[in-house]
Image 1 (cartoon, rainbow, N blue to C red):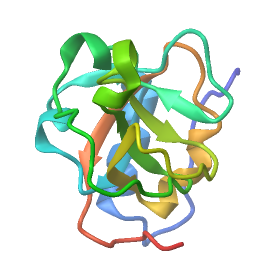
Image 2: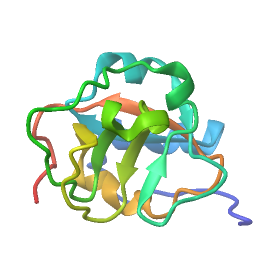
Image 3: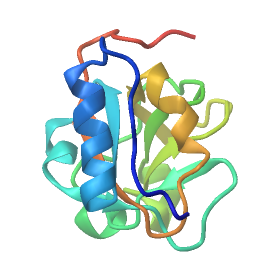
Image 4: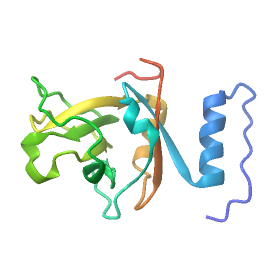
Length: 147
């Protein structure tokens, strides 16, 4: 986009925000902070699929890696914007697909909600393009997440 530099005029910027900006500027990795993030998902870099979806960010490597359980939850939960989800055994061959909702979506018994993106990071979800590198980071429970 032709940006030569980034200047931040907020002297109270958090260390978390500085680290997020630095990761994107130096490595083109988008950091997404998640409440309730399964630890195993934070240990690897992810990429949005090349066929960008309207309603969700789909983590390209998820089905191949199968890092989280896919047994259906006892109760299907609504999926408001920022929900981190995994398609469970009820989704057949899509079992293990991990997604982040860009819009509010209804409950689906075939989808388990496994975490929530903090509110401060919601704005960037709709801007994630094809092949974008993503790093999921555990956030302090409840921090900046409200609905």
